[in-house]
Image 1 (cartoon, one colour):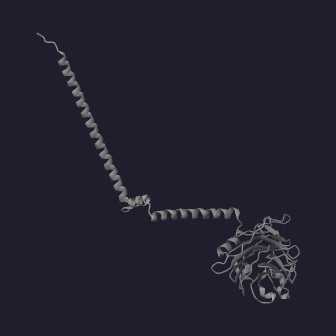
Image 2 (image 1 turned 45 degrees about the vertical axis):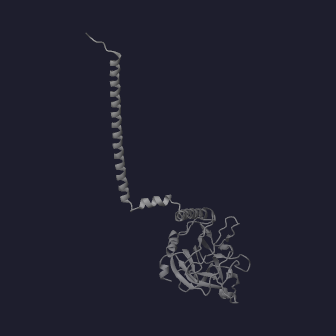
Image 3 (image 1 turned 180 degrees about the vertical axis):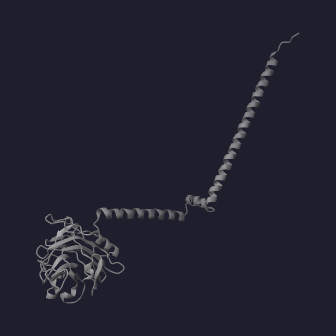
Length: 353
């Protein structure tokens, strides 16, 4: 006789199913937890290995000390931080000042004539910053050996027709235009009249003198250069306040690069990059704030002047050679001038003087 399943039998079977499912869920949970733990352990091991490699590449304790210093708030760390900010500020400040000087301030090595002008026409270059197109000339700041400055100019003498035997004809001079100071034509010093030169510092002039058998003269005459430098002196005579340097036998119809280099009381004159004359002044040279005069309408000479430039220091030999190698700027500032003059001084001049 078959017996039917009662409610108690069904309830028992359902409980078994629930228990079995619960056991499977617990087993799955434990397996997942175990896998996660293993994965975490692997990650930790790899992290430790990477940290050991990085620490091995750095000096012992470097990273620890660096982290400690960054996170610290000690007096030393604050001081170092402030100093770093100060250095960054000074670097930015110097860069800013350099940019301002380059783009908005006047150059301390200005070009007064960037081109070619006639020597028998007066050109005045103002040093007054309030005047349009002025070119301020900065006085030399004493360097290791004292006062320093340099002037450079190119000169071309066409002939000596306008040059009087008793006069200096101006190439350029820095001084006053007042009557009796520079005048139209400057009398020679040996004539005893020197007051006209008292405010020309420096002044470069052309003369002519008789020269027997001169290879470079014009009808037995040759040109000469005279540099005038005003100096400081307590003497009572006018002649005590200026000193001159003479260079004879200057060729005609040739471009000549004249560099005047002053260092303390030593004056060097370079012609075409070669030291031609040196003089030790008796006193310190004097500088002034007057305008720069180039050529002269009445006291000039037949010829041309080009590329007049000033430096507030005694430039080096390499710089002098560079100026000579560039040659004169033959771009005519005067529209009536010819710009096809290309003759340069032969090296034979230095050997046949």
